[in-house]
Length: 301
Image 1: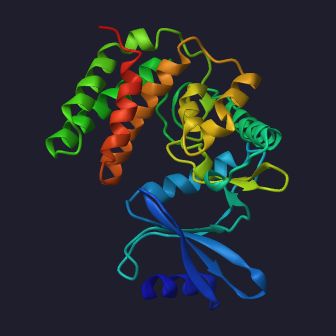
Image 2: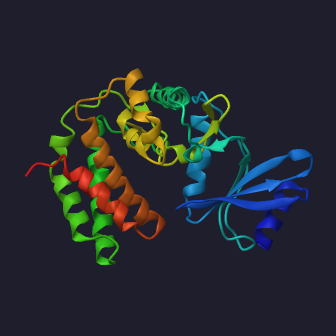
Image 3: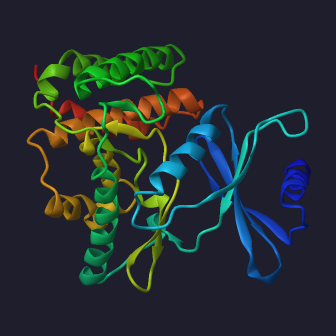
């Protein structure tokens, strides 16, 4: 902690009153650094190389299209001999973490759900001028299936590596292989528009103004793509999203495809494998079994 405090003081050029860890994730930990006169910043310390630069770029781009504020980046530090981890400093935005918000009133739940859905749709209304793929990559694909089938194949290889380490069971990897073999059946409807996706749009990454029952800020974009708009939707059922009715709120404003639920199950399981592999975080086996069973419902014999 002493090295981190020294690094922050160097970049900020002033002493802080306090520093407190407020978040722990697969790829980074987040600290709130407080100063005189009620001023605060958020400092994100990354566990893996390469993630910080992508998040910095994603925050800059997505903030241009979000209804709700997103944190502005103040400075970044690339790991060196003084402090080995990458660090990103950004504005500290006020609000309650959405995953911790619970309303008993149906009216308040609906108001918040509509606010969450509207902000996601604001992202999805932004279209790529030149095809599908990673936002900051020069490589583009004419169709989403062409892009995503390549990614799914890479994730299968990750799953096999995790199984060899005892992190995944054959039940999970066999289901992944079967789903991949039925890729063209699951993704039978063409995705006609390449839209901007947040990549991790769930209530843990949304700040809420509890009084107005609305989104006060959006944080932590991850793996942003020009992709299928429904690529983001499985996240709406995570955390407390299902209780708030986020998917229903989204569907009331933007119609879903016939194969949406099957795609959501596919995205969730495959993306979970990728996150565990890339982060090195221990696999939550019960959660993976649950997601595997969900995908298995949509697979043929």
